[in-house]
Image (cartoon, rainbow, N blue to C red; front, side, top):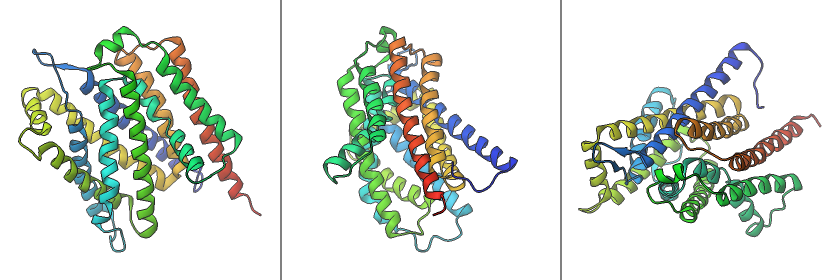
Length: 329
């Protein structure tokens, strides 16, 4: 992995980052699943306005990043101006909304698997649009991930899991997940472009700019007219305060998780962060199956292992490339 020297303190810091990322995002996953499947109160109503989670997340992360910039950033001069994030924030608003909305139609484990197949649209775009040639091992990774996700989608889901979904519809759910990945690809490309044009832009600057525009877009979408869904979401939270608390903790986990991701990348590099977040997704599926009562069949577990075998192999290939670059000429 990318390192800056051995030491007990470094091992402790890495363990701290792993614990922070896992705790924040596994808890967030449980809350996301709860908010999409639970029937709240004596009236047994579902929280239908899942897009409201994105608005709440934007607001919390906006405040969080502002505080972090004031506390830790030495200077913001030379960073990207706030208005440069407007286009990336459009896709960053639509994409996650589709990903969360998918939980009405497919289970949480299915959503995690579908969103783990990010390499598939990236390689397709690279091959078809830019003419990039990939190696055989890279195609093997893609085959394992695509095959695992496809097999999982085709296998029968347990009736217990289906009964929890608001509107079971696998094709629509998976379609929303893959649209989420497509929009994420545009978001990442635009953010990379901004970072290249403004090298002094910090991670906190990006977080602030993205969430500022995301807050604006979501407020317009949810509260821009009299019958906007935002008003119904607020009213639901007033009647069911336990849902409001779940939303708050969900957003707080997202902000804390981003903090640990930034720390991991800055101290240990992107490869270490990729490894931690990939294993976290696998653990999230295990937790969902055990804690949330989403039983998976033996064949479905085989599909899950197939996907994460492909992702693990991809991480190994990146590590090997990194080692080759480090070898003295």
